[in-house]
Length: 101
Image 1 (cartoon, rainbow, N blue to C red):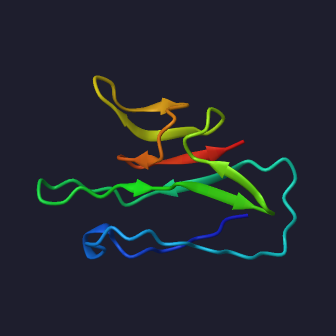
Image 2: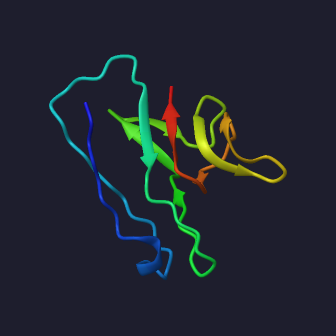
């Protein structure tokens, strides 16, 4: 199942206000393996778009993005650039995703 959500671009959200997104669907997920994908990265020297996700809540269970079990691609690490792994970060600086286990 794919769910697409469009959020106001960061450049228009100058106050850096967090936005809660609530989705309801009729599919019961088992052994959830949820991904949140960042697909419109840009850094033109004036603007650097990033995605910040604090947590995901599914059926009352909270999955913290910076938890040991969360896998990410697109998380920047000094000296490595944007690489894959369990980065314990809630920021995607490059196109990629968070995967919650």
